[in-house]
Image 1 (cartoon, rainbow, N blue to C red):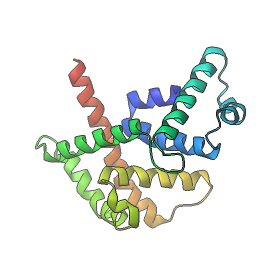
Image 2: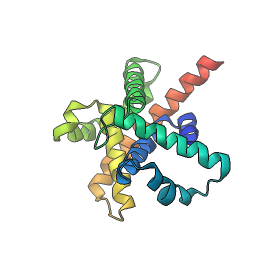
Image 3: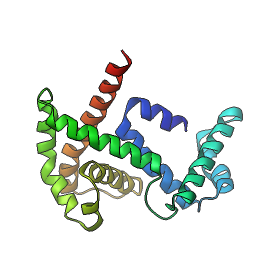
Image 4: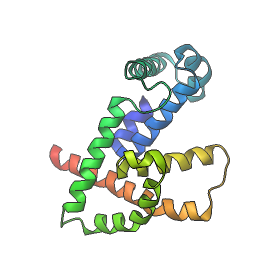
Length: 179
C-alpha cells in the first residue's frame, strides 16, 4: 500500500507495473492473506499500524480479485481503470500539437509496439497496456536472473521512454489542475 501510494503520486506507469507485481504476488500465495502476512510482508519490516494497514490493503485486493474473477489472470478494476486513463491521455498527447516530443517518442516506439501486438492476446489490448506488459515482463525475467537479449533491450528502450514521458505528462496535467 505504501509503495503503491508513493508510486501513484510519482509515476503512474510505475504504479501500474507495481500493481501487476502485487497481483502476481497475491496469486503466488494462492490469495491466502495469512501466508502473505507470514511469508511475504516480513521482508518489508512493517510493524504496528503500518503492518495492520498493509494487511488490510492486501485483504481488500484479494477480495477484489475474487469478486472480479481475476484470481488466475487479469487485473482488478482499479488497475484497468488506470490503464484506461493512461490510454486516453496517450491519445490526447498524440493529438496535441504542443507535444511534438511525445509524438516523436511514440513513433520511435511504434515498430516495437507493432511487434508486441502481433502476438496472440496482445492484439486484444491497447498499445499502452502492451507497453506496460512488455516492461513488466522484462522486469520478471530480470527478477528470475534471466538476461534479456540485445534485441529485446533495444526494443524496450523506446517503450520505456514513452511510458516515462506519458507518466510525466500525466502528472504534469494533474499539477495544472491542482494549481
